[in-house]
Amino acid sequence: LYKREREGLPFHMALLVDDSQLKLLLSESHILATKDFTRWNTERVLVLVRGPLRDHPRTLEVLKTKFFKRLLSFLRPSKRLFCEMPYKEEHFVWSVIGCQVIDCLLLSAEGTQYLDQSRLLAEVNAGLEAELGPQGDGPPPGRVFHRERIAHSMARAY
Image (cartoon, rainbow, N blue to C red; front, side, top):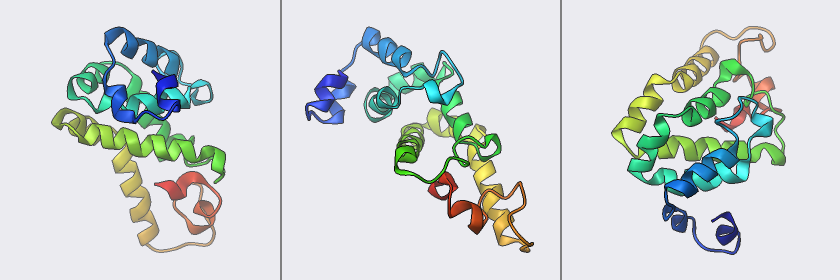
């Protein structure tokens, strides 16, 4: 499946996966096996969120696993994983994955509810509201979206 995509077939072809192929892609993504994002296979994650997980029944099936939970947790500002990464081209894939995950979840009422119940959006909102309030000297530890911090980190990708 991934080889077909690399050969130029569109991502919508990835919708045509059967149950065993979906399980294989989930397994190869390594998200279900570990919380350590450095061990996740970004290529497989992209295949999933651009293809099979755009199909409502597949999304419902995967919502029962830890796949979305771990991805959304990784993106949460309070975890300091994504937002503290240096702003480098090699990390841009995480921004693309984040956008695609949110897009996948917004395609269904169940996914939208799942996203709403996660803390990701609330944390991003709180961080932005903190920047709209009174400004102190320098970037306090909790201010993810301070201009000095976003100038050099992936926090600017939110």
